[in-house]
Image 1 (cartoon, rainbow, N blue to C red):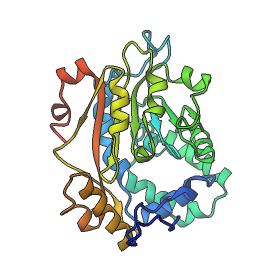
Image 2: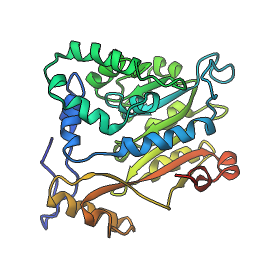
Image 3: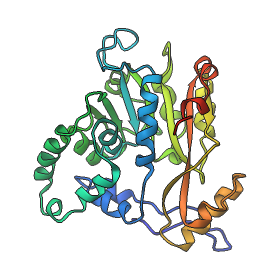
Image 4: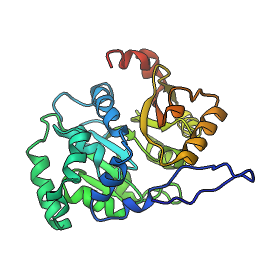
Length: 300
């Protein structure tokens, strides 16, 4: 965990604590240890929302090969900033985020080598696989995290690429031809339209994009870029979703200031000790008009 932060001349911190080092490990035990200690919970909130969106985004009730735009491929989910495949684990298996925290921080799991953990994980997830599981493609700049997600059977395909700095590889282009839903639960603050547009340009019917975005950041650049592809973005204004506790008072001070500067009210949220996210859903204009976001989440 990186504690160094930029500061204004007044000494006010201007960024959140970074956790880059936990994604460079060969398996997710450090991830669950570090983030579990702070009550990180965005994938828990996303689990229910993403499952709700799957059939609406065009996934069949019983997953099967897609004969339309996917060119015979399965309809897929593309999870951007996927890390070790946590969203895939929650989406496709009868597990909870709390259960995963308990598993990966247990003494037994701590005693295993990475190879032993991967073997254990393959059996663990296979025994809990949902009958309506969908193929998930992972995209992240952290190669060790991608390698684990594929080895453990959570990611059907995985790509360690940074689309902010280079165009997608031909292999990534091919793999995402059948993508119907793009998901983001972390890292949206570090992304721009450069990550999304190259994968969506030229698509007859672009996939939906569902992103949980920290209130300290902005989704506007991504929304503006996707608008060029005749897509529109809706923000769920009915609620926010707690992300994690602050690492210290300086980080909380930063968050309160950033949320206030964005025109939102931090009272009862960031002032109470947690980062909060909001859900943004980007879809083709006609689909958004036919089924507004608030009707999709009505029963949540």
